[in-house]
Length: 255
Image (cartoon, rainbow, N blue to C red; front, side, top):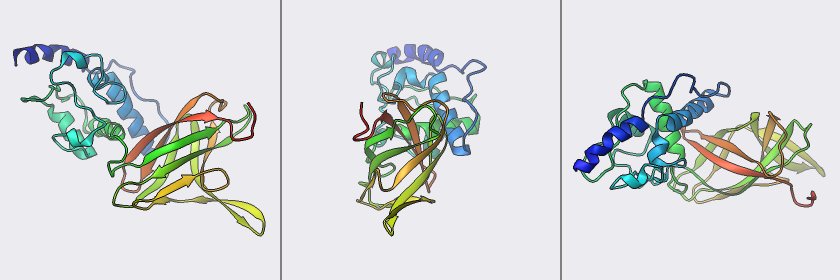
């Protein structure tokens, strides 16, 4: 126990408030801004020092802690609950007890900031827990420098017992994202926007060229092959999920 107490000053230093000017960038929807703020707080308030950039418990201070920091990707390990509301409450209270790594409280954070940080932590939870979808085979189509739109494709696998409904999508570096469906009518392909994208329980929904896809509008820079862009899925129940997709050329588009 004494060695754990000696680590508290080090943890307090790592988790100190961010300096002025560390705010998240403005822009985007309310949910998007909240998530960006949460990510900024996660990095600037030292969470990354223990939990690591992806929440796997592999930060720079992890080796000095016994037991090690919680793996935030595993919701089953959250002793005080893994919902956004429960995580926000834990952030305010801190964690100090036998058998767990200490975590300082954050009394200086406003309720809005604690909620934003909790929302970001939820996005770090591993896929297939019932709260998020498993995402695979995702990619964004590379586009010419002058192009104002491109598309993203991915496969969504809902292994949970309840339907998950995506109501909105945002993308890093784009003004807007729309869910589109392509259907052939009288031999002519027609595209129309969808207000929501349901993924039934136990089902797999494929977003692919020629079918349902994500239309990415207004890039802030050319969408070049070899890059990676971050998409954020927002569900009807308010849950958020972050996925990173590579940019590449489509089949038959050359090298």
